[in-house]
Amino acid sequence: MKVEKSIEILATPDKIWPFLVVPEKILMWFDSFKKCEYSDDKHSGVGTAYYVEEKVPGPLRKINFEVKYWNENENLVLEMTSGKNVNSYKIRWNLKGTQSGTTFHFVEEIGMPFGVIGKILGVLGQGTADKMVENMLVKLKNLSEA
Image (tube, rainbow, N blue to C red):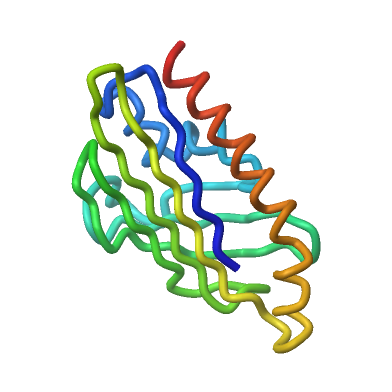
């Protein structure tokens, strides 16, 4: 399943960036993450590791992510290194400064578990996932513009 959305935020990329990398701030807008924390002492740059518990319809997902790409105030790529109740998970966030603020681009790609049944569930849940991400982006916008 893939969700891809963009939103215009009236804030500079450096004001938005902490909401993408600090676990406590991620939880303020990323509604499906019920728990998010650093996995070790590294808290910035490529190799930063996060442990996440995500609650979406179905069983709780327990996921370990690692930052694969970190270009501060511009791009962040997180990839699942291990997890429960999901086969793969990749998140890409891009910030592009504009005259009035920032365009934030969100891409989430999830490899559904359970074979054919998981693929069917992914198709059936696409609309819900799209709406959830739209709502999360509005929260990120409001937090960043405050």
